[in-house]
Image 1 (cartoon, rainbow, N blue to C red):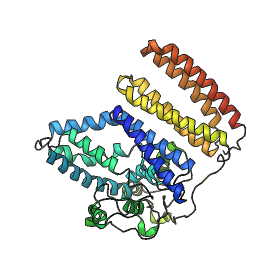
Image 2: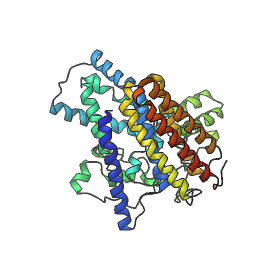
Image 3: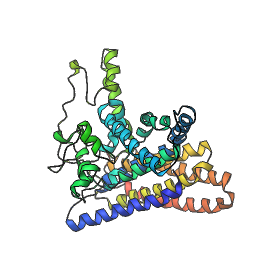
Image 4: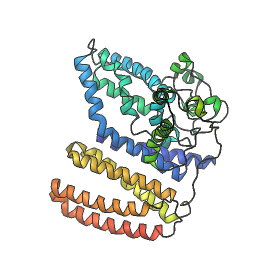
Amino acid sequence: MNPLYMLLVIPFFFLCMGIEWLYGRIKGEKYYRFNDTITNLNLGIGSQIFGLLTKGLIVGTLVWVSQNWAIMQIPNTWWSSILCLVFFDFLYYWAHRWGHEVNFFWGAHVVHHQSEDFNLGVALRQSWFHSLIAAFIFLPIPLLGFQPVIFLGTSGIVTLYQFWVHTEAINKLPRWFEYIFNTPSHHRVHHARDPKYLDKNYAATFIVWDRIFGTFIEEKEKPHYGVTKKFNSWNPTWANFHYYIEMWQAARQMPKWRDKVKMIFAKPGWLPEEMGGYQDAPAIEKNDQKYNNDNRSMRIYVTVQFLLITCGLIAYMYHFENLSVFFQWTLAGLLILSATICGAILENKKWLYIAEYAKLIMTVLCLNVLYYLNYMDWFLIMLICSSIGFLLLVTWFTLGWKHISYKS
């Protein structure tokens, strides 16, 4: 993704979230919670990082298929762009539907549904791996002869369209629009954990796919959001891996290899008859661990950390192509570790202070080595700024964590 494009998009996302938050305050509605919002945004940051690390494989595969296996060559015109958009949206419907109906795909997509709120921040709560494991579903596009530039353009349009449908601030729109397009009302249903709303309204742009394939339901009562098996964590890394770990643990208890394989492709929650199956009823109360909510210093510390992570992400994306493979992965690891520690602070994990000190030391070392090897003219400035920042953050964190009651 073009970093200059992201320089515009990221502030736009934050601006829209700010407007939604302000609108909620005026209406007396609490659309955002601090812990949930930070987690959503850190998951979005991780998604962008892994997207950068895997884009070469995905785009390279699309280009290779287009150049070697396309059955025809479709020119880049306005009509082919519209046709590709509709076809992409159709394939997205099935990718999204399989993301709910196949265990292996749900293990990645579940990340997007874990939040028990529904706001524009949830739109940014994305899996780190789902795009990679579901990319094969979109291979018919280059196979038919659509050029990669059109595919990537339509992919961006569909992704941006889905941002605005994640809100409670917009009620129902004109009937004709609701009939054709996906809207906040339709998508609120999709994020519900109420039994009658489960596995409905998979559409990205055109809700007509759900109407055609029998997965549409209209919003009536206000939904309760989240997943049926409650996810009580603010850890973005755990959010991406926990379902696969649970699958592995369940598979180890299955005596038959047939059942182990079947579980990969079965619907979420499936277990062999002798193991009973899940009995998960939707819980109404929200996960709202408040251990650090009263510690104003640490809330501000987490906010500052998030702003630093965001700035780091923008710089990382801007310079990504010029970084060596070592620094691409090392800086990615430090950004992911920083996001994970934010979750640990929100959960008061006992190990967080060791991890935070280690992260601060590694960050200072990595940045200064990077500048010494590649940006020597700026090395002294980086050395001074990073050293001052390191001392300030270590002091702030050391004074703050002494007042926390830890969890194991």
